[in-house]
Image (cartoon, rainbow, N blue to C red; front, side, top):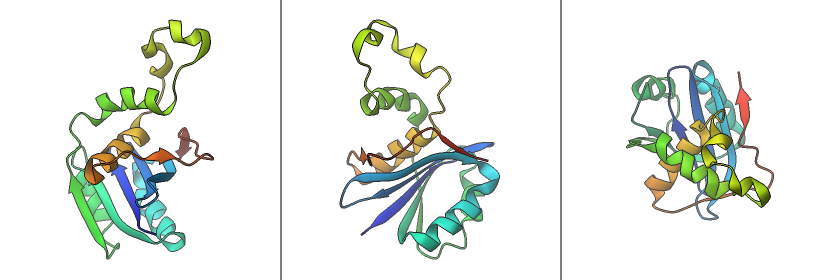
Amino acid sequence: MFKLVSIDPGKSKCGLVLAEISEKIVYKAIILKSEIVEDYVRNLNTVEDISKIIIGNGTTSKEVREKLDFFKKEIIIFEEKNTTFRAKARYFELFPISGFKFLIPREVFILNKNLDAISALIILEDYCNMKFTLNQNLDFKTWLK
């Protein structure tokens, strides 16, 4: 299995996605504080055979890249322009509105959502040039502090 990690770096928090490329499935999608990215990826790498890490080239990408220097496989800095904006649309592809909620403006549903994990997913999808599906047990709203 060829597993990839994608990170949407930020000053205070990062979105992170773990996906299996041949199955096109996302197994983890989390938001975590920036200061624990290194420890989280280090621990994740002990239980998952991560082949490659893709980091968005925006805010703090250099700092995140330096923190992950322990990872001896390939680390790629990849374009992340407009991923936060695009994450809003992708959110509704992943979690479609149904029933009477369809009549309410979409923006109401995502005002308080943290879209960093979805932005990390978009970075991964752009890099791989394919769409991924979510594992059925996946919780996109997890925060690690």
